[in-house]
Image (cartoon, rainbow, N blue to C red):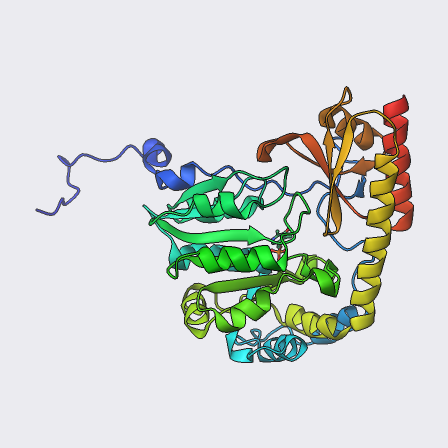
Length: 381
Ligand SMILES: *Cc1c(COP(=O)(O)O)cnc(C)c1O
């Protein structure tokens, strides 16, 4: 019988209303993503080497396209991002109908987990994998399964050993963040070949543009033919468009169709689409960014390795950052504090099982030289 709400009816005490609201238990279990900081505790701006952004900024062509597109802000963006899909497809020899775009590749990673995993299912990734994978799994009620690493690198056999009949999605960032390590084309192919056909293999190539041609992992080639491979890319890293939040992905028509059903409508802005189209065509900016990164990554790694016997170790990196392990008297926490005092913010990762490590983005020449000097001063001081 309907409660008429009359004098005899029990009324909820409205002060209790918030305590009655309960997020789903799998949502309550999520530890929020921690973004890279850009200012010290006192608000002082610091040299930000904590979010793997492009130290050369945004290319002139992308910036000009962004500005031109800003003339018409009253209309919704192209919901199908046709020009963007066309530009990506032309650049990589892909079918534009199978290119999907997201509000950052983050959205695409979440879509993959949402479409293919749920309560009772398992989502597998390596220890020291990208922090978003755990959130993407938990958000849909799936169980994250973490495979052991091999001295910070991806261990394909360990990953495969974690795959069960409940596994629905395997995430692999290649190069990986926060370690910077690269799984070879052979290892990626071997992993895919051994995965059951009902497991979606999400190959997150956020840093692929930093690789030399001989390092490429063959992911897009796999995604062209395999029904269960989803490759994701981003405009946030080498393309210098992190502020616009644009990512893209490639997979079979079936996978792309499923993901389109659940992505947000109008998920990539007009200015973002225009800037991304220009960015992907700006081959000089991309090449300069890659060369700058390779040069100063090698320089910084050598500087750190030559610091003497302080227990610092650089994990071999194929990305635009270095993971530095602190295995001596000076801890990563101490170094992090000293660098912050010196005006540099890097990424200390205790929440990701790496309290003994700092991830350092390769900055401009001046920033990189300054960082190396600050590290040296902190060890000697
Ligand atoms: C930075 C990063 C991304 C994506 O970032 P978006 O800005 O959301 O495109 C995805 N995966 C990894 C491994 C990253 O480091």
